[in-house]
Length: 292
Image (tube, rainbow, N blue to C red; front, side, top):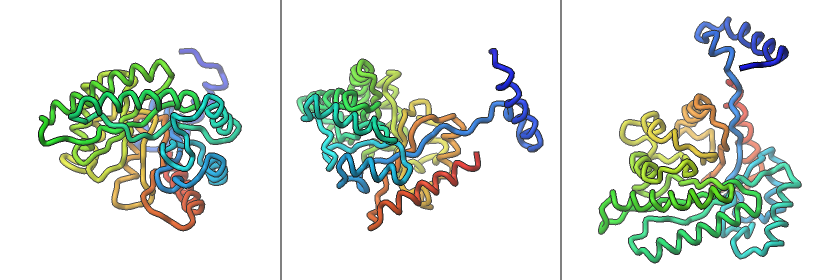
């Protein structure tokens, strides 16, 4: 590897200073970098009533620079948009500090009814094309359930194979296919791991969702490690200062794996002052990142 003199001196200075820290080796000090993960927003509850201009203004004012648009909300970014309307949405975001991280859909692939499964797959393709047209980078989907009349393994395989085909389709449009860790039983991380193993496509990723089930079984660290190789560009979190979930450990794990994606606020409360609440979460995130 060849680096210029300025970069070498900067790295050497970093290493010299860090070498004073007892638990940091020279090699670790030389390459230790500030994590690249960014704070973004999901319009699930706090932004469900905001149209696109309001959404852009509110996120710009709170210094949150990425957004996953939940479909069927007031922003009305849906497949029925015309080509000109799609261009208009793309331009509004392109002219602002806010980036469309992608679309959050409710499409799922667990249906025992194969006609429903095919319909959901085709609907997902519509959202993939829409995300590409408005400047997004991916589409979020769900597993979403197990069914008593169908063997568990068969359902997990069906979901995984649907993801495989859709991941290939999405790749042609420059979109990532993101499986949200979701569903009463499908959100258990061993089941998510099986689904992703069946999917077996480099463009099929997971969207970590900070569920209480992440602590089940052998605990948070085991479950995180079980699927971390499948992480995509999005991770959903609730309020980062909540104490009912190990958010410091989550951020530590993301930093260790040099995560470059989006930590997206998908808050489940309903504060009267949502702008103030977003500003507070921005401060919490920045404080958490300051240790790095």
